[in-house]
Amino acid sequence: MTLPRRLRAVFLDVGGPVYDDGNYLAAVVRALDELRADQGREPVDRAAVRRVYDAARARQGGSLRTALATELLGDPGLRGALHERTRRHWVHPPGTLYPDVLPLLRALHGRVVVGVLANQEATVVDALTRDGVAPFVDVWGVSAVVGFEKPSPELFSWCLDRAGCSPEEAVHVGNRLDTDVRPAAALGLGTVWVLRGEAPDEPTPEQLAEPDLAVPDLTGLADVLLPLTSAEDGRG
Image (tube, rainbow, N blue to C red; front, side, top):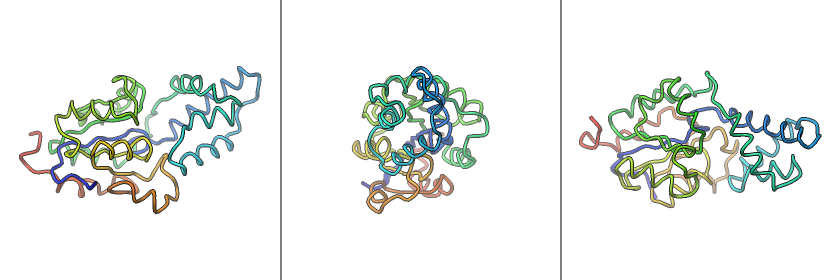
């Protein structure tokens, strides 16, 4: 797979590419503290959370929820409860939008369909509106709203249908191999792996070979994508 020769849509994951993934980690810690309190246990060791989290980042596969529930709650069966508690606390506070997001979206605006394609709560729409991102978004592929979650193909297909393009005319920008790059590539989308947030600190050569493009951040990405569009493909 290579980047599209005729680009008509760009989809972005939210946690990592758009907002700091520390927002999710903070919600997980609060959820773990609450569940451990239910067990009559002390608050979770923050260093232990970071160890499990970093191992999952390096692995780029397997369930983080299961690993956290197993190691820090003592019961893998609590992964569902951990997820539900985390959802209550998962927000994107002001100041956590990466500064390279709006410049990219301004450059893409009117040239391609721009979509959010992310496993997020519905409240992310409010955060993106507050931070000036919403006016640039044409397709809102938010899992809690749409009803499908990555890495299942349904969320990708839903977004492609709303964008009115084929997989070969789209690029997905995400920071995880297991829920972004691999499922997108399997459907035929071009893939951009952003090496921040839940991406590993030191990706292996094998991991770096999976996406079509790996970038440290969104700076300069428009210069790569815009030549793949043409005036007749634009949106006005």
